[in-house]
Every structure is written in structure tokens, then in C-alpha cells.
Length: 216
Ligand code: DX5
Ligand code: ZN
Image: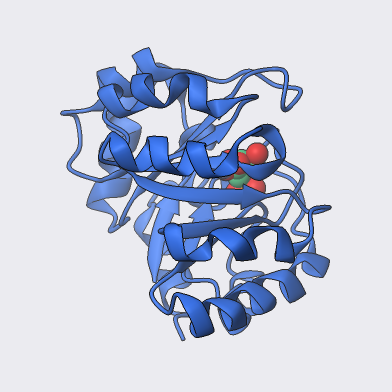
């Protein structure tokens, strides 16, 4: 299991310290939510902020792009220090070209699907992907309630990946905490994003340990 705390729930005025705190607390990745106010009704941060964070932590950067036509910005995010780049299948015109672009700049490609998007749309791309992100809330905001009806999609993608791409990671994002972690691991997710649950705790090692204890 890899744990990827989302800095969306952190104190942006102290971003470097916040990232250091999750590194010291045992996180595996740092999840960075990029929103453009078009694909989702919210704006967060972009490549310049990510670039400033590089060098402040040794954690790999798990960059979740919630932006229209992500292919336009892959070079920028790679240059800023992204390690995994996840884009939304609903936001990209040429899926294959976007995956290839991410790979060509030396990053690990991942596709995300919104709660209303069918699992099967990612099947043709599984062999080329490092990870699939199944959103467990509507993308756009932290602190929303987990949607259990997304779980059958995690299971379907896990089963298909076991056939064609056994080392594919499946990430879940939105409303994950000490209660909802069990259903996501049971259904086959192994990369866990948690924003509010991790950052609202004074000692971030406690939620991270609780999440890890649900490992399958
Ligand atoms: C939502 C973002 C999430 C968000 C999760 O669009 O993709 O990463 O930060 O926050 P929580 O864990 O608070 O639901
Ligand atoms: Zn996210």
C-alpha cells in the first residue's frame, strides 16, 4: 500500500513544513491537486508552486491534474518535478497521445475517472498505465463524503488489470479515512489519497498508521 496525503488540506502558507511533516510521519508520496477552474469549479496551484516544493522533500510527487486538455502542460509539470502524472480521461481529446507524452518526459502515466464515468473506458489503456485513479468523490474540493457506489468500479478494474497488467496500481481519492479505508482495500485499491483525514490531525503519523493497518 502506498499512502499519498493530499496537500489540498494543508496550510498553504507553510507548504514546505506541511510536506516535511507527512514525510516524517511515514507517507510514501505527496498528492498534489491541480485545478483549473474549467474542468472543475475550483482553482488551486500550478507548476511554479510544485517547482518550489522540489528539494524540500524526498517524497515522490503524485500530481493529479484536474485540467482541460492536460497534454498542453505535461512539459511544465515534468520540469517542475512531477513523478506520477494523472489526468482525467473526461478532459483529454487524445488519450493515447497524452499517455505517450507523459512517458516521453520520464513520468509515470495515470488516468483518473470521475464517479459518473464507467470503469470500462480505461480498459483499452491499462497496459500503458502505471496507475488508474478511481475518484471516490466528485473532483473539485476536499472534505467531501466518500461515495461507496464507486467501489464496484475499483473491483472491475482490479480484475481486468489482473488479466492484462498485474502490476497496475489503483488509487482512490476523496473521503478516505479510518472508516472508509476498509472497503477500498477490500475492493483492490492500493494507493490511498487522504487530505483532511491526514492534515487535520496534529500528529500525522496516527492517521497514516491507521490507513496502513487496513493493508490487504
Ligand atoms: C478532490 C481532490 C482530492 C482531495 C481529497 O478533487 O482530488 O485529492 O484533496 O480530500 P479529502 O481526503 O479531504 O476528501
Ligand atoms: Zn486528488
